[in-house]
Length: 350
Image (cartoon, rainbow, N blue to C red; front, side, top):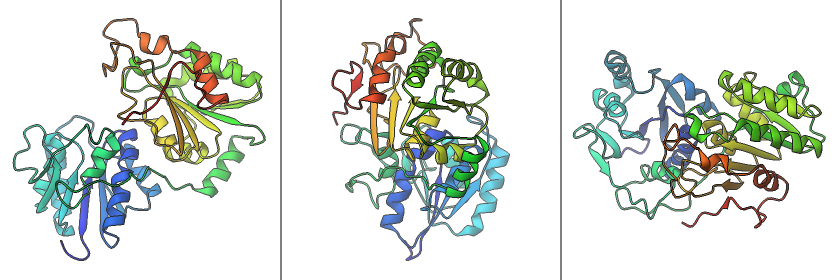
């Protein structure tokens, strides 16, 4: 590879995945300090690239998740041919994700074996999930020079904080920093199976509010009902920021929290790259695969026999993996982090 390599990374479409991919970007920047690193990304996650100092440029390709959009991919590839990329790193395993680097005639196309990708990926890597269980590690491994190289200690995602935007948000939303703050991500865009019950979130907010903690509630329009219920339950110090913040705004405000609590969703992982302490609530997904990669983190998971099923909707109809995770456990994680009496506290065994 030339002394100043030019690399295109085909980035993920999901928010949490793009955050975890920063571990790969940090590895590449450390291994190839003079390289030019560009990320191909949809509009939904491209805004995060500006907060990743390892990346030189975001290349937009806004295609709906799961769509082939052949004409759009071919057009994007034509535009990229003149950029003289020596390598493309494709993070997803689908054939669609590998099309643009192949059409752009990028000579080295690195990725894992996936669906119908023979020829599209010509630097095929294998993955030892027992040795490397974390999803962030799976991304980072693609940044090693060759198959079989050893991955050193993972650099966790760390998004840049914009202090000017932070100050603007404090003024706009009249936020007070004179008491401890819990940030909340109560939504679950992936599906209801990943959502801790709305009534539990409201009860947790009520108890924190009564003890003098501020509750900052984040979310999209789909989370309005649970956010409003939490705000009503915590009338003294809650701030309902649902539909009032961009992804980068959440980054800047998460950095000011004492704790951040959320389901296993993009916003929780986004906060993990900025907040000092994050509590991830898990049910149908594996906390040892995509834990909150924060400075300090706790993952709460009951580990039922039916978990992790990774389903969007509970196939058994009871959603016990989330329903049976108590408010008391999450409250204790906020107030006394790491307390061994927390029934659902899960420790990584890798």
